[in-house]
Length: 326
Image 1 (cartoon, helix red, strand yellow):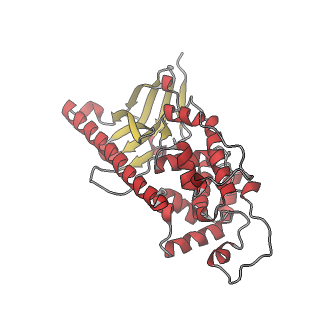
Image 2 (tube, rainbow, N blue to C red):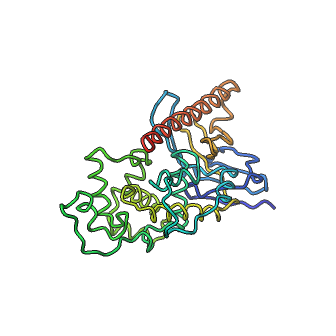
Image 3 (tube, one colour):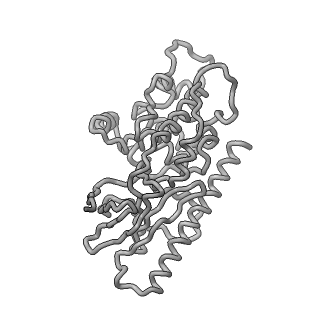
């Protein structure tokens, strides 16, 4: 007897399924839910209200696009085989790749900015990466620079190398924004930023108490990037090693991620490989009422949009590389 599981959760990067358990069948029924059958004969029902919706179009946009998709299995397997540097502190010599968090993670995981976001977010969701671990704590000191530096003024109340306290984190974000110095924060999904800005310390503590790991991970990711320019090599190596350790235990028997393309009445099962987003399956809510030609046209348009997203994201990524290494 086939097992039936009803899912009422948001499908983010932590949902991964093995290549051998690919989608056998996927349909959008009149109950407005997505029905998926995997190759292992498991059946799942996805609530479309809980899935990520987008109305992105093939308009030649040159802006970065982030979609919350799972990582493709071969990419995950590559990360699992990447050696983790267990020597986080010591005198082993400075590595140029550890100059910034971005360069350190990119040297380890490859890919582009979407890979950076997904991998960092996953390590936070799973708890492998903790922004309050002792290695992230700033040493206690009464030392004050003379003359007083701007960085000291902005970070003197921080207990950690990233602003763990919401009030201090939001203050630093606003300073960076007013100075037009948000850097990678400009490309963080807006929903992450909105959640970060509207969450006070009390609400943040509630997220921890209520085990709302995904929301807390989004906020912690913003905090990391807010304080990224203050990280030392030890902290950068710690974050990098925790990301790789998280993927050493990455689950490979879970669900695909589905994105709803509202302007095409389409549900698109997607994943993220080394190159960019790839489409695994497309179904339409009005499948029974459209012609073969209309369906083919929509499929071509969606493929074109995803190709355009990958192209623009690659261009944005290359521009950022130049800003770091030139």
